[in-house]
Length: 349
Image (cartoon, rainbow, N blue to C red; front, side, top):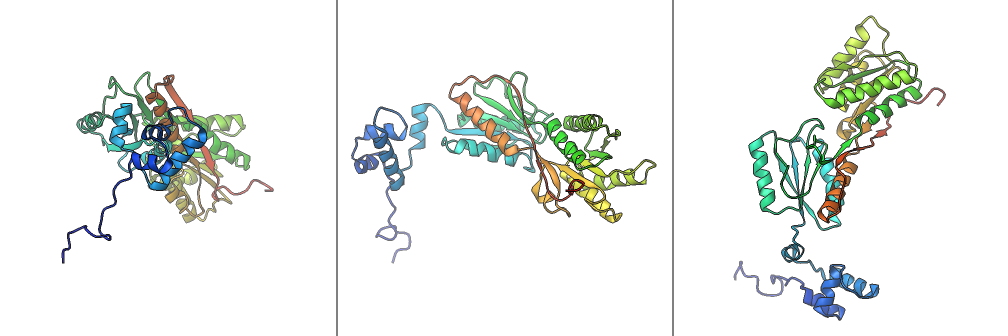
């Protein structure tokens, strides 16, 4: 008794369905079947649909290599990132994949860390694979990836990372997102809205702090300078000590620069028997769901819409690959406010 044979009905390998099989089943020529499956040629809509339905029913899979040679495309896109944790690059990649999947394009992900040599190796590998284009993304919008993407001779898009001059880039509108948060707190009747945020070396910290100050001025509320520190729960905890143990009036709301800081703020308030949201409302930034939903109470926070950002980057890259001219520049995509339980209801609500 042989264990390695694939003879017999049970172990026989099924022969791949060919274009000829599709043509025979649909009652057309191989040439007509090929044109229908590539959305080319002149034929009735009914014929094209019948051929495409037949191909699906038979489980026909086009020869990717042959298509690549025919169209001089590899149907792959390179994605470079230095976001080793994946907090930002994974939702961006999900959006990119969502945009590309309907066009038969797959994503080739490479992590360059912060190593220029590794970055160049990955770029060379992508060029060897003849990717149709490259999308660069990272863990912050004000730092360039440690690799030169200029003059590669193929389309390059930047998404959530600092772009080269004169290139096409997509970032979230951090200032607009901060406005959403602070305006929401003001509508809820909060009058002393503190801002606890990240390190001053980050550009987004200053953008969000500026929006916070602007909204307070527009609403006629007393200014409260931003408290800057690490992106950590421990800093949120320490910031509450500064806000409540100082000589000034304590806040009735805290807008935080990220969800980790907000988590620390909520924990520190609970330890002081300060009720959230009854006494102090809290809003975060990022909508990191594993943190925001696990907070007690669940955290209202700003979502940067990174999946949508990735989708726009992917669609724009496809346009470039197809030869469409796209104006260079930075596109700021709107954020959205995810309202949960850490803010409470407006007065009389």
